[in-house]
Image 1 (cartoon, one colour):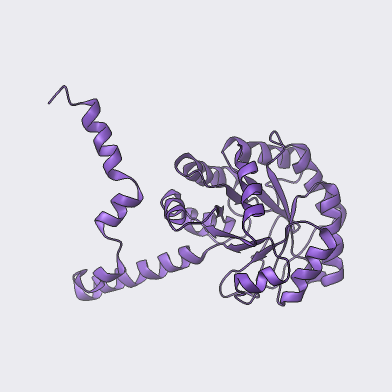
Image 2 (cartoon, helix red, strand yellow):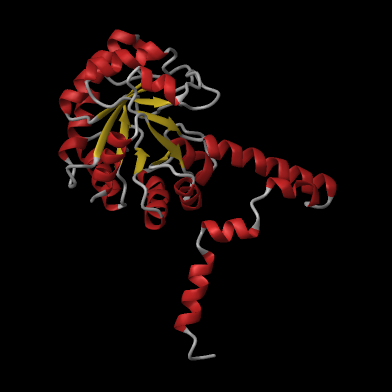
Length: 291
């Protein structure tokens, strides 16, 4: 079963499907151990985590592919990838993005309707391309699939820019163009999800990101309005950053890490997570004759 088929099966099996952001391969393994059925690579996470820059259209397709490959090579959970605006203005650029993501082992991607100089979906000042241009992006992505089960998700930021009717109109047009799922960004009220779900008759994703426009709805609340996927794109990343900041400050101020040991993953916990002992046993088997 392809990665795309596994993602579709997970969406069918869990309602809503909880999808957690994994900033790297280690986090992907932790998410799998916690019982999640699907994981996510955030464009903002790639920008901030791998490059140390804002999510303002600075990172490239190759930056995303590097992180995606590292995750899919070590973890078999289906990976949904943030493909920003498709990484290029033309149909050929978007086709290359989709084909490259499939080769990298991704299960699906979402493409948005912001202009190339994009902004965070929960910040002011967003600008959109016209509906026709967004439809062309989705048509190009759907046409480029080498795996028919690879998920094409259309993200629209129109709610905050043009209002709900225009956003739903864009979502419908994207579904007609070949989008499998819809991602309405910066939703502020639960009933809005229900309107998207009713209008598009396909899985709708709720982006439950912290410190943004969207309240932290529970899975029960999201299920009640027909949401198909609940996304937590950077929850662990934010916690990791705060923990790192706390540890660095403590070591610097106290001259020791003794006071923050309780905030650390132990060596044994790390070894269990990355299957250290299995690798070690393999080395022993390969080179036992030398000993």
